[in-house]
Amino acid sequence: MLSVEALKIRYGEVEAVRRVDLTVGSGEIIALVGANGAGKSSTLGAVAGLVPAASGKVVFDGVDITGLAPEAIARKGVALVPEGRRIFASLTVADNLRLGGAVHQPAAEARLREEEMLELFPILRRYHRVKGGNLSGGEQQMLAIARALMGKPRMILLDEPSLGLAPQLIDTVFDLIAELRRKGLTILLVEQNVALALEIADRAVVLANGEVVLAGTAKELASSDLVRQAYLGA
Amino acid sequence: MIAQQIINAVSLGGVYALLALGLAIVFSIVGLINFAHGELMTLSGYALLASLVLGFPFPVAVLVAVSCGALAAVAMERIAFRPMRGASVTSLLLTSFAVSSLLKVVFQNGISARPQAVAMPGWMTGAFSFGDFTIGVGPSISIVVSALALIALEVFLRRSVTGTAMRAAAEDFDVVRLMGIPASRIIATAFLLSGLLAGLAAILWVAQRASVDPLMGFTPVLKAFIAAVVGGLGSLPGAVAGGFLLGIIEVLLQATLPGAIAPYRDAIVLSGVIAVLLVRPQGLIPAVRAQRS
Image (cartoon, rainbow over all chains, first blue to last red; front, side, top):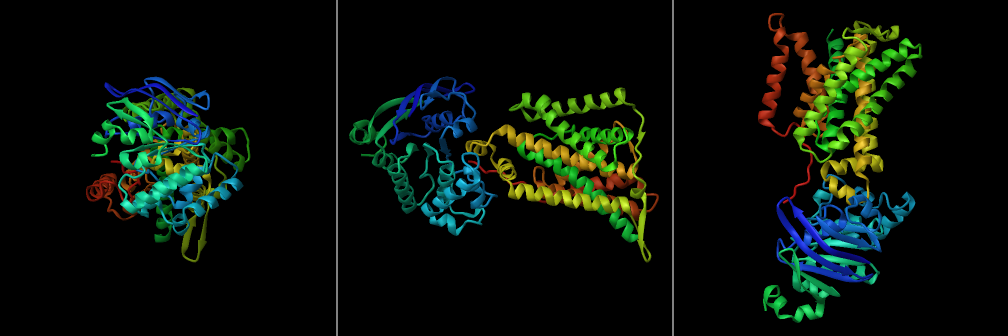
């Protein structure tokens, strides 16, 4: 469904991503793991169109989307849940959701979709009229995911969904990710918590210094010496 | 006398508020302080003049003038600011100065450097009285129009999807684009609204002065800029509060200062502005910005 080919990203003189190749099949969860500054978020940013690629290609559903504007990529059915959630703090939960689904469907359908989201995230129904900025970190993460789902994406890019959350909330978020996959959503997950990411993912790609150093099924990686020593602390 | 002064104060404040709001809307979305905003106002003034000279009925002339302001603002964005998208704040600022100077010269050479009289309908310069109070029709209309415009804008920003997206874009533009909402639609709407507000302000301004000149927009927009800064640059409620505050203080000082001190009115007002900014550097009602680590 998605393939990233020889992606290179530069910020001025700094090469954040030297070369990343990866593919995500329909209905798969692929985890992109690695240390801070390995180029994970930049890669997601390039797929979503927020970060320009210096070279290489991003292909979604057979269409080259490299260099398209973020809004054009979103309309093709790719939704990014950005790092740090970035919900609209001054807007209510309802307005955050409304914007998420605004351009993807007629208004009546968007209302139905919102109802589905409120079923999936009961906490958001409780805080429907509350400003996003007043929610806790975990609630904001739920809102960020629900907002991305409002547009009925076919693929979702999750950037560090566990960051800054209490352990039991992390479990809730990951249960939710598993449920979204069961419903057929394709997921590219960036995560620093490697153990957790490998537990949920089908396959994983390990980045270091902007390059792919290892790729394989989640099981293979979980038992590889490199991953165990470098990321799982075993 | 006091009632008349209060009406004048609120009416001037309303015009400043409309202009400050136009500056704030554009600033909140694209981070540009549009110094050519005053020329939008001047252009609307000339459009009103031309429509009246051509014999259009007054309401039609008003409609033409306000539409001209709005369309000119959208055109300005397309021609001058869109090619500069992503440029530094300084480049944007210089671009807006360039557009402003260019338009002033066009008005001076293309029309006339001298003020042109605008034949406003007679009823606008009238007054009505209750008992001892005499209240001008012009300032009263100005207050009503400003209030209606503020309410309409508020409803638009709260209720419509585009309005909601604009509030969101003021906070985090990239994420709005991630929702699939086109950046150019948001930016064009911001300019359209700022042009509409400048057009309305132009009519209210001309209604009280009955003339148009190439530099007409300069002073009110400078005041509106001060109002927007005092209110909190990029904050829409702040712009409205700053506009009214500045208008009211100006008129009250004008009315109460003894003759010997009156020439220092602007100096006193600006000292007040400095005092406010010393205490509240982010303005009276600071803008909400996404806080990112």
